[in-house]
Amino acid sequence: MKKSILTLIFAAVCFTSISFGQQDSTWKKWNWLIGDWAGEGSGVPGQGGGWFSLQPDLDGKILLRKNHSEYPATKDKPKIVHDDLMIVYFDYTGQPDKAIYFDNEGYTINYTITYAEKSIIFTSDKVQSSPLFRLTYVFLDKETIGIKFEMSRDGIKFTTYTEGRCIRKK
Image (cartoon, rainbow, N blue to C red; front, side, top):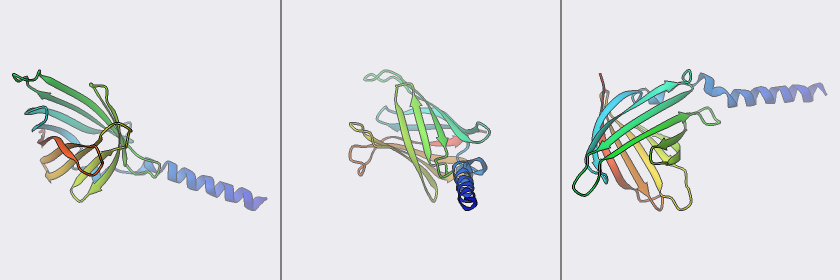
């Protein structure tokens, strides 16, 4: 009986450590991207500009990204103003590998995050009758990053919707 109780206690401690390991995690892989940024880019909506911020929130347990983009009116299109909010959070393993996105157009996108040597890549979860989305941040230097937003119908071939560069605000 004592052995069973000790086994249960050990299992509970291990589960708690795994589930709440995020409490001690850091955002090391994200340090180069945390801050306030201004940028310009182009794509399907046209030539535009905007800003975004990525900051720790809730005592460092999440990263909160706020984004604002504007594309001026043309003779063929009205002005476009796009605002969104994204929350990056730790998954059950304690890694910052998930994000949820909301925007002023009514979209909600769940992302899985992967890392390459100098980039952070958000790929949307598969949703029936919806394209896959991929958002990539690329480290260019301490003051400059590249951003690309892509879409795919098959999950293999992605088409660029918008891309640009951002400069760290002083």
